[in-house]
Length: 129
Image 1 (cartoon, rainbow, N blue to C red):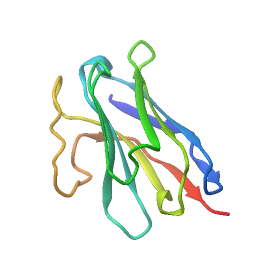
Image 2 (cartoon, rainbow, N blue to C red):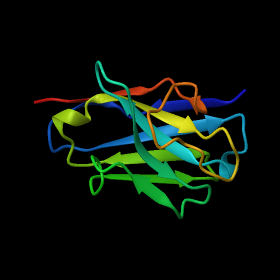
Image 3 (cartoon, rainbow, N blue to C red):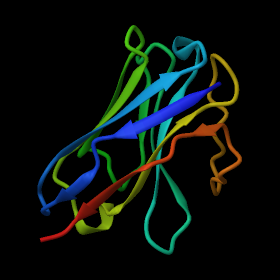
C-alpha cells in the first residue's frame, strides 16, 4: 500500500522557519516526482514545489520562491520542505503528493484536484504572532 506521512508542521511566528518531512512507503520512491501542495483555510489546493526523481530539478510557486527549498533522500525515502521567512499567508495544511506516473511529471498546470496522484494526510502550518 502506498503511504505518505507528513510531519514537522506547527505554530511559528512570522519570519520563522519550519522543516516539513514526508516519509514514503509502498512504492519505488526513487522513480517518482514528488510535490508539496498546500490548502489555506477556505481556498483550493495550491501547488508549492516539485522535485524530480533524482532531485536535480526543482520548481517553486512564485509565492514561495526564494524562501522555500525542496529536497529528497531516495535512500531514506524522504522528501523535505524547508520553509524560511514564513508569512501569515503561508498558513495552510501542507500535503506531500506522489505523481501517478513514474519518471515524469504529470502535475497539471491548472487547478489541482485531490484525485491527482497519492496524497498524505497533511500537516498544519500556522504562522501567527
